[in-house]
Length: 388
Image (tube, rainbow, N blue to C red; front, side):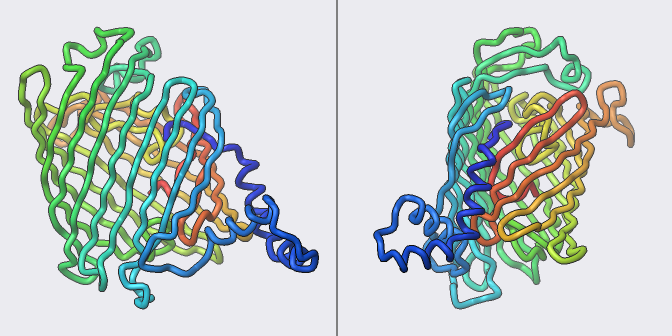
């Protein structure tokens, strides 16, 4: 979700409710009265954090109002569930599924379904996501020289849906490989400054297929505390726009490490990059910002054909279901390679840092609120699970 914040008092109050839940339950039993609204809320939040994992997802939800300078007032809702394809196997990581919805007074509407399905004995894993967005947002152009120019800021309406899925067979200890598919539709209209698109088509459809391979020794995909993730994706795409057909390829890599430093502390680090080749449509170009990469930057302001970013984050459990994080990072975008160096006149490095609050919504599944800062920009992000 784009630069949103659920009111923190909802999470803090929920923590207090859970902490004093047992005391309230004892008092209720003494009074022998029918549970009221407060007691039902206590019972509900106790249930969201139960440790038992069954073969059917036990869904829980949290939601509330939020505000940001970009999206104005809104209402968000998160529904999340954990399950296991073999509950008797204590070594099998749980599968997860989540649904996120957001609607604001600034005509921002976003809906996303995502999850990871882990087969019995971890024989294969399926990752999937389906997202729909209809928002009034901003555009600065393509390439670092255009995007960093504040005078280029312009409004436009953005409609898109994106589908991703990959199937990874287990071919070795902690090693998975298999096919992946992607489908994207992007529709941009009502440009304030159409010259910034430089004739690029505003409506496009893209279909892609490729392969993915990864080494994954993490103890959890939603809240990893130790292990490695090394992932490489190769996707070949066909795009259609204005009766023209283009071809482009996407190479994406991720190297992430998680270490336990002391009790309740995890040091997480990630190097990530995305390189595209061929006739890459502007709507499918790598960009930074939003909920995952370079939190605090306006999502989509900086975009180019290639991107690389590095982030180091310290995560500390504080008390009961509460935790905090601090992070620092850097990213660069560039349109093409020149020899072994990239095109320096159209590139640059962007710093990023921030702090965040974590509330344990379910076991190994956190609600997060991040306050991110960048070069001339800042943002507040609400989401489920860790950024990486």
